[in-house]
Length: 276
Image (cartoon, rainbow, N blue to C red; front, top):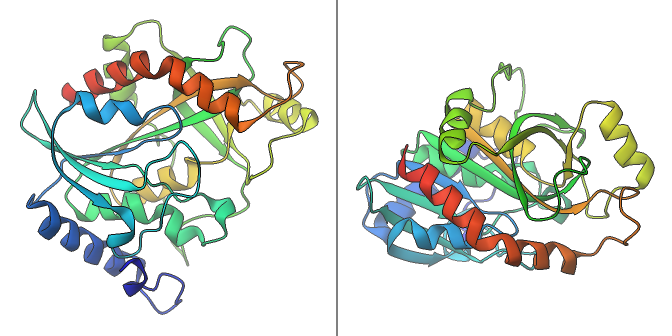
């Protein structure tokens, strides 16, 4: 059913597509409005279980415009969760589309646009990433305070000008610090992928002011801001960037670090969500 909405057709309005997906989710879940959305990257999947009762779980491929998960470590479902502490509802997007999948930027950001159309005012974007700071060992969660987009593209089309000065909400970062005062903050650098960065590229990211390197998040954050969402970004350092550690990079390492850190980061994220 995901191909009912043809996001590849340039005549399709991506916001109409998001409204179509949101309407489908409202019917399928029985929840008229979702208040917050979570995009769960590698290592973050357990957070939804701690929020409260899962009202509905829908295969992502059933929802207009969504695709199946293409990366090990991501789930292929969209969940509606009633947040126990507040009675609000969270839309949990476990099937993220990455730019390197070749499906187009519209599909990469369709999830956050759908969340906004579903009524969400806040989105939490998570990812697994490489770290440049030796103090952030694998398994360390880090708040994103800013980003550098090296994908050479944008989710915005035409003469669409959006101020990104405070893209990653200071208010939400302060809230996260209330939950865990030890959280660090850093600048996330998105490369297009799917290959890992070279040591020279990692050094370049550091010269540019980056602290974290990965293959997701920035395009979603831009689209979320354009859609009026308040954004919290959180990275899980799953490995040191290339050239910092002598160990070759591998996706299995990402999964292993995510699994080891899962209980801590899931509890952290759930507690932040409950305070929204």
